[in-house]
Structures are given as structure tokens and as C-alpha cells.
Length: 138
Image (tube, rainbow, N blue to C red; front, side, top):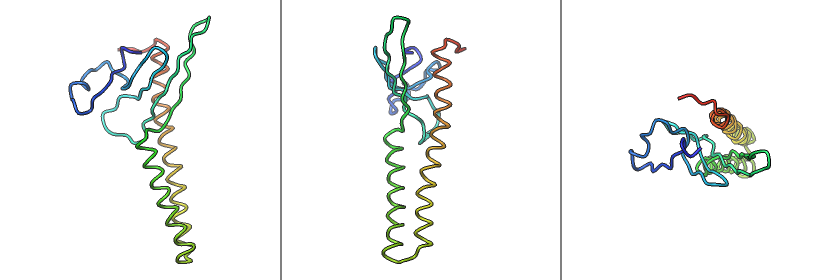
């Protein structure tokens, strides 16, 4: 895992030039915090948090996929803005059509974000499973 994971400084191009790196992040003895290497920005890229526990028959890896803090901010900000507009149109202007549109957009924002996040989780999970199954090819 440490061989295919690199700690990246995005201000230094030299840290992003290795071709055999599959993940960016940190790998420790009992856990890791990684994300898939990408060429262009992706708001919905998952942060993979892993915890490794030893057992008598090997190891167990517990994975948790989370939004990056920037994506959480994006989702929360626009959801709150749209819900705020919805409340304004209900109580301030008594315009139920605009209120419904804003509320529908807030809900749509949530579902679209989750859709794109789950799509990226599948891609990251596939790379990770191939890596730990020792079936990765150069």
C-alpha cells in the first residue's frame, strides 16, 4: 500500500510526477487516509479512511468513504441557500411556486451530489480491491 501511495504537495509539481502512484494520502501502521489519484479536479472524489486490525488469520481492513471537507461545504452551502430562499418565498412573498422550485432544487442538489459521489466510490473501491487482492498489473 505504501508503494502506490504518495503524500502530495499540490504546489510542487515534482511530487505529482510518479507514474506508479495510485493513491494520494497517508499510510500508517494501523490505518490510512487516501484518495484516488486524478488528473483534473473532481468535487465528488471520496476520501477513503481505513483502519487495519490484526487477527489470528490475517488482517481486517475497515473502510469508510467520506466527502472531502470542500465538497461537504459546497453541498451544505447551496442546500442552505436554496432552503433559505424557499422559506423566504413561503413566508416573505407567499409565492408557493418559487418556494417549491427552490426546495426541489435543494433536494436535487443533494441527490445529484450523492449520485456522483457513489460513482466515484465505485471507481475508487475497484482500484483498492484490485490492489489488496494482488491482482494489479503494471
